[in-house]
Image 1: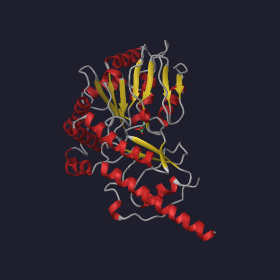
Image 2 (image 1 turned 45 degrees about the horizontal axis):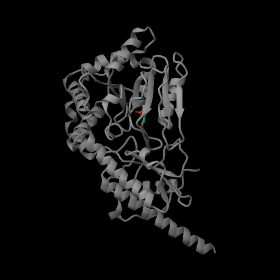
Image 3 (image 1 turned 135 degrees about the vertical axis):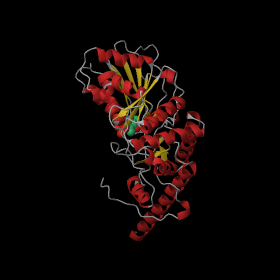
Image 4 (image 1 turned 45 degrees about the vertical axis):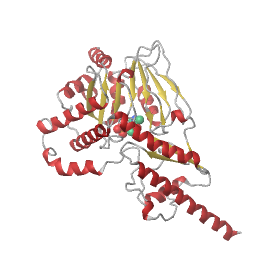
Length: 387
Ligand SMILES: *Cc1c(COP(=O)(O)O)cnc(C)c1O
């Protein structure tokens, strides 16, 4: 399909969302975060990241995350550079002892699977797949020492509950990149919950954060001591040591850390993770309810229990050209509704992170209905003219 089709329609000003950012990452940054950065950035931007103000910022992020996720005392908050993707390499270097099990059900979980498969010192992983728009279930396997789960598969809009695998002994490694801050998770159910801050946390990309249980810390130390080659950049013991001193191994994006810290405080101010998750779930109820009631749209994820509360995928009937409509909406300032690029379907994908206002989601749905009504009228006129 050529991507230069743009559906032409008008939208009354009163119908437009106040903020047209509905992307799934990078996602909406609240104007208040940016204002705070502009007014307070001079205190720390352009200063040494090893000195007071930047270390205080890292300390603020680490303490805020500990509170937001209600971490037990013995869990660690670790961070470093490289984003969510880097953490897959960190895990294959320093968390998986010999064989992992991967639930592979979309672009992101599939990429971690591929990183593992390409890692020469690890055994061929156990891979459990399911059809797009669903998630598979993990199962205990005696020779598996790490279970790789993805709380929210951002490419398909499928979410799965995070629970330890009954009867299994390995570590539970959870990719929470698009879920963290917008979905509930219980620390007892994971050993590592890793994410990047450009989704629910409305910061920029480039950082990874890992919430680590004592078992995960012990595993990282065991592997580091085993003699396996461990590049310092991927070393969890090095990251643990730096993080404990409110440092990163090398220079971080300080502006991003600030946006991140502001968003953590905002989420805590909403009432913490439960309130943030409830806000996203309410937006999701609105979007999925609209799609279910619509004559030309339907939720892509058939099982309501597997529908993500933070990323909705909506499939359109054949007579609606979703790509052209998304391009048309973009011309009106409604941004980033494109489906994941690996996913060639007649879909839109809507970020419903806690920062997205419900009124804006309502306005988005009205705009879509308005656009489709006009396109339908235009198609009807064309058919009549050609008859
Ligand atoms: C966005 C995303 C990633 C990739 O994160 P980067 O910081 O861009 O590397 C990984 N996993 C999931 C589930 C994501 O949504």
